[in-house]
Image 1 (cartoon, rainbow, N blue to C red):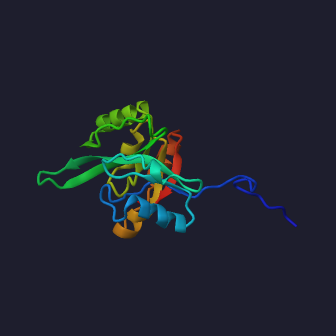
Image 2: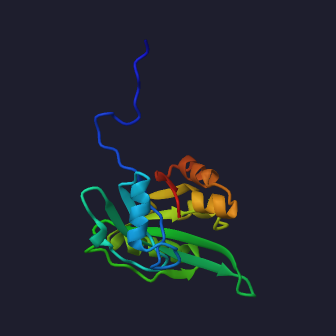
Image 3: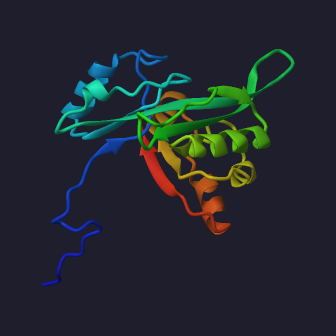
Amino acid sequence: MKSREYLLPPDQNAYKANLHSHSTCSDGVLMPQELKQLYRRHGYSVLAYTDHRAYYTHTELADENFLPIAGYELNFNRRDAKGRTTKTCHINALALDPGKAEPIEGQGVYDLRVINDAIRRLRENGFIVNLNHPAWSNQMPDEVLELRGLTAMELLNSGCSWTYNAAENQLHYETCLKAGRRMLALYTDD
């Protein structure tokens, strides 16, 4: 009989987490406490609250079975002559220590220098930075390759995939890996 091989050691704790969510603190439909209840019912122990341009710690939601991660989503947009967004970059800033992390302005123009400067300042201010849904954002893999200091990239964002039928982000991620960039892969709900 062949012995079982485990990706994660069976004697280790494992935690189900979602690192991209929105509440009524921005454009979500559930209040932060309601999000906690929904995710707990589905077996999650960790939820990052990443409302658009709104940083809240939600430490009051922490208990022995649930860890709220403080964060927020920033966006950088390119617009056409009629003001329509033609390309965007969304990044999630997740606080390493919610009491010490210092947020920066939450939006800007789509310019790789501006985005890289924001990533650098966020990291200096106590955040890790993840790239959200680059395919949905109309970013090209070579543009993503120019971003510096990212910890992770969404390979699948179920909100984008199911709601907007947007492409998944494997090509963007593979391009970064082939270029020697090390970053984690995320599957999120948005």
